[in-house]
Amino acid sequence: MDLKDTHKDNLSDIFEKRISFMNLIEKKFPNTYPDLHSKKIDLSNKTFQKMCREVALKGVEEMFEALGHLKNWKSHRETDVPEFDKEEFLEEIVDAFNYFLSLLILIGVDEKDFIEAFNKKDLIIRERINSGY
Image (cartoon, rainbow, N blue to C red):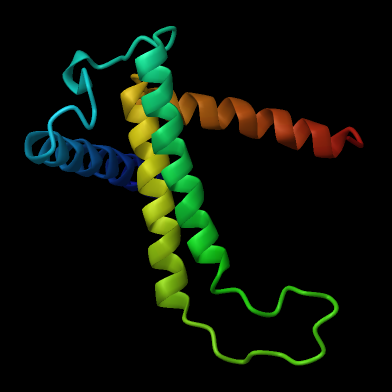
């Protein structure tokens, strides 16, 4: 198995683990993810838009928690804070990623859809850089 296949398997594993976790949450807290098993929610529906917004904002909140671990970013700060806990920083980023992954799953995106969208956007941003964007 080459490295590309390994990454694909890892991505599938990540999606499967997140779906399994979302099912656990839905079982314990009904209506957390309405229509989770329909594979795609109706994004024209107000209730589903609200749910998607709430999930996305939870991801943003987790990113802010991660950013709280960065102490040396202020250009006007004269002293450095030498301590940095990479493990805690990464944990918060993983939390954010999980919420954003949940959002993708809720709108019916699977690993194949994600890879296609990722690669499409990668080509666009590379072209932007190469064309003086």
